[in-house]
Length: 133
Image 1: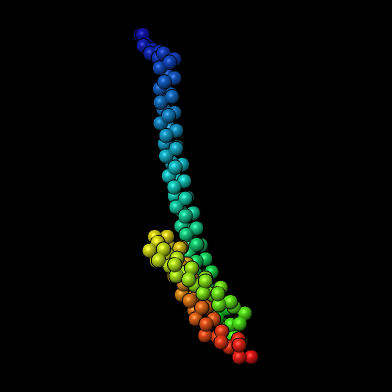
Image 2 (image 1 turned 180 degrees about the horizontal axis):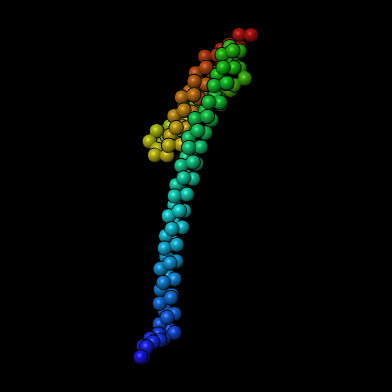
């Protein structure tokens, strides 16, 4: 009984192994790329959430300033030039924030515009009280 043994040429074996390795590497690359994209999306979402929180919290620091002005019934320690200058800058920047697709910039712009406008209003209302004493 004769058994037929097929012997492949070493170059053919090498090419076949190289092709199989290439397919495996491509699959691994795809898996790592997919995992990287998912990880980046999670990280982007986390960064976005932190940014929105900061965009809301940062303008809230105007509230203690307003409370202090009302309690003292004076805004003599606040420069009118500074308050109006910052507010005018916010007015000029506001349209950019209102139409922006970046949620962090939009939220910050809206909350800061509202709260700093309140600072300006109270500064103007109580500025007269600084000269009465």
